[in-house]
Image 1 (cartoon, rainbow, N blue to C red):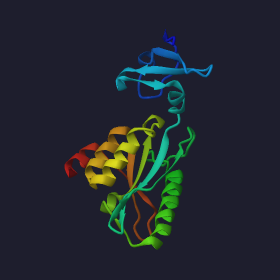
Image 2 (image 1 turned 30 degrees about the horizontal axis):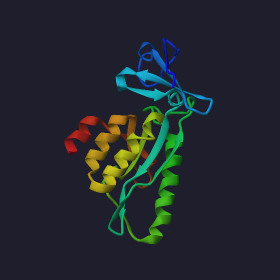
Image 3 (image 1 turned 90 degrees about the vertical axis):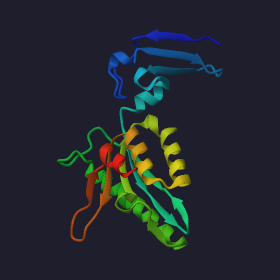
Image 4 (image 1 turned 120 degrees about the horizontal axis):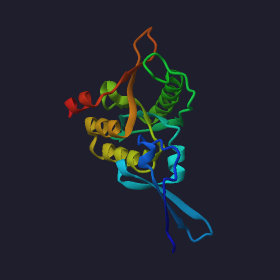
Length: 193
């Protein structure tokens, strides 16, 4: 197996790291006449697939519901890539897309209520929207979900979610009012736990 390292190979790095910090590329043959290309990201202290880095230019908007049903915790998810030109409200919330995702997820939860009563697990924080990089979807998010399904520790889940997201909101609605997106902050989440 041969391994090649290149310096200064990226023009742009989207993982919150300056271009200069994405300076090493690693090319490894995969045994199938192709190569795997990874880039070293110092602020994450690990190698990430270049394909994932390129996809990370488009963050992912994720809707999350936390509830119990028949004595078991559930956390359905729904999401979409966030286009660069998405319309945002005055607070920076991609409100139209966020509303669509929340609506679709709540329809799924409502349909699931045929299997038994549904109860919000984290009161007002039971419906969340998070904007996160694609690099967190394959590893970090499943770990957070598994931990919450096992422990039910909602403050710890929110702290973990805030650690991997660029922005996060709780979603609520009052009678005769539009959907409200309330930004979650690390300090408020730490006070809960």
